[in-house]
Image (cartoon, rainbow, N blue to C red; front, side):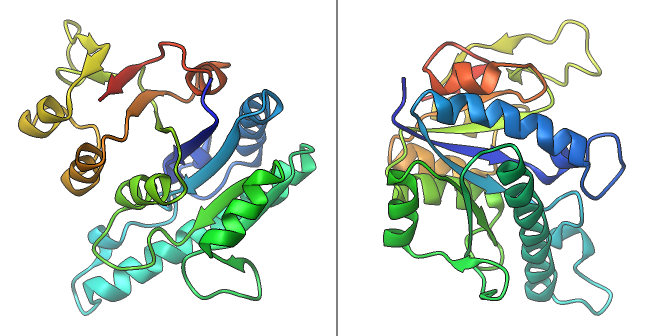
Length: 234
């Protein structure tokens, strides 16, 4: 069982039955899945995306600077983090929301020692604002945060069972990998695990990644316990 894990939740996973925004029922279900991990004694850090509201790279242009667009995306992660914090607390999970962008009225400022303090007290720490800088995805922020807080693994949840050699929604003969090397994931353009900056950072510091389906009940807890779930990149 891992002592401390970084769970990467995409914004799309929080939209649930809606096309955008937050589905409270879906978020509550995820909270119960995370509670299993916390109750087992594993410390949990969550990096949340904001794609259910907007993606900076997609709206940049036509007068909107890329830096501004990325800042807007960070605000999307903030909305998700605030909602998750309340829902987690309602599910009896001690939770703190920390932010890498300045938002003292609604969240604590991310400080390394403060995050460590919350984790050691058994609180789930949800981090908003990505890495706080433009041109970097929340995948890269997740790996960076996992390294900073000395997590044992990055658990990246998706809507498929793992990493395939091609799109399983389009090809019936798609084959899922149980294990991949960093080099394989970087070299093969058909294998989309994380963006190259995130993958390169994980490879440089030997941070293992586990990619699996967030919709399967119990899989977050199994992954946090070190069981074979989805695809492991190492």
